[in-house]
Image 1 (cartoon, rainbow, N blue to C red):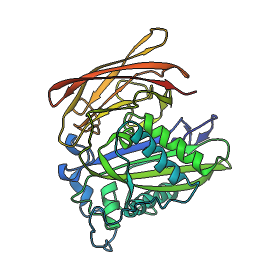
Image 2: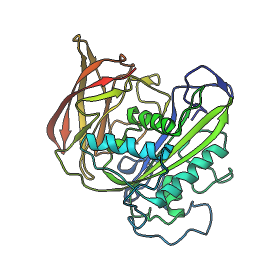
Image 3: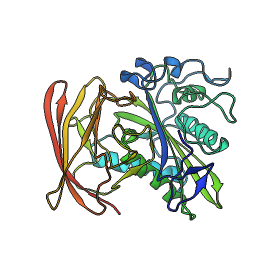
Length: 343
């Protein structure tokens, strides 16, 4: 993707205009072969021998590197990402994620790779580049001993820059919230997974920090509750009113869209959205585009989830009522609620 970063002011880097957020995402379901999992995507090299060296440690069990209490430093960007994702997941009925230190190591290696290679936000690595540890999220997890050949692996990467120096927690929160509003990045908040690892790297651009965040998520498990669950859920506040610079670009848009809404269920389920609308307090109706696994040109949306989004930004500081309709395993469902955008 383009070498874009987040911005609060207009600057140029390598002739590219800095955009609101720069990020990339991929989901690998090892059993289904590749970056798109059930829906296709990259080849089944995700859990094979692209690991960068012959020093791969023996694979452990999926949970052997789990920790019951987060090990991230207080006030760190990593802890802010961990808490933001889990708070928002749990609020909407999704299970909290457990830190896995092997996934931390894999994520940290990729964050350092991004920093060592000009800050270009990417999911994949090139073997001839500095800091290479594996082509895919699954490769990098395998390299540190995680059994990625038999366990589902997902990942997201992001970059953030602004013309000021923020606290580490603020950098992490900003990146997590950007993921939460992206059509192809909201998955970290709704996938039926149980584990997360977080990596963080900072370089300097124009005398201010340029932050690079990476998460690796893993281990699909069945969720409880009345599925599919909706995100953001009823009563959410501070929802970004627009999303800019996502890669891949959401279909049928110029890259600047409203925040993504997602519905997600369990592995093996088939969720299809058929329609969606938002209505503001003045009665203005916004028709949403729906994106399902079967219609996603990028083959990243999974069969157990679906998206809805406005092709144009929403209005800041505005309450919207949500109405989504679709089917789960052929049975009709509807979801309603409301959320309020931030500034």
